[in-house]
Length: 185
Ligand SMILES: [Cu+2]
Picture 1 (spheres, rainbow, N blue to C red):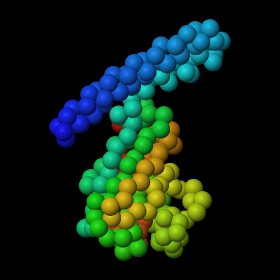
Picture 2 (cartoon, rainbow, N blue to C red; picture 1 turned 180 degrees about the vertical axis):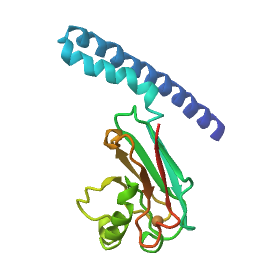
Picture 3 (tube, rainbow, N blue to C red; picture 1 turned 60 degrees about the vertical axis):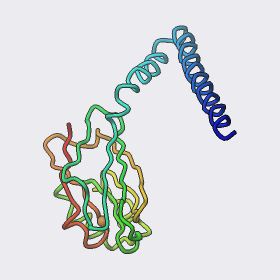
């Protein structure tokens, strides 16, 4: 009986999967029709977006892991300049709470780092250890604890040619072990 039910539900899943593909294909095809009739300047951004999405979706994001040993899993963070928005996922694979072993990612020019870190320490956990409105900060994540993850986006257009950029954690005392270079590729 259990096997029979399992077969039925497997068949149902297979059917719904097929249905899903057909449904997904249909709106895409019909979406092209109105775009052809629309004025050129309106149609252009829409078609450019849909054409770029499948190839760039995977490349415009990265995952950085952190842990209870006060470490990021890398010392270099690559950000793709060709991306309109670059998504960074920060994971905390440890078990300690944010109050004891919280981590974030802050990105700034290397020359601004020490100021951002010292002001961040005084900004408290409620502000994710980032001074509110700090214009030296190009982007930052929330502060997370063990078992949590958070996502934030970076505008690659904010990085100037010829400047050095760093990523780091501003939880008090963490910078020494938790920092690395931002590399624009
Ligand atoms: Cu940290």
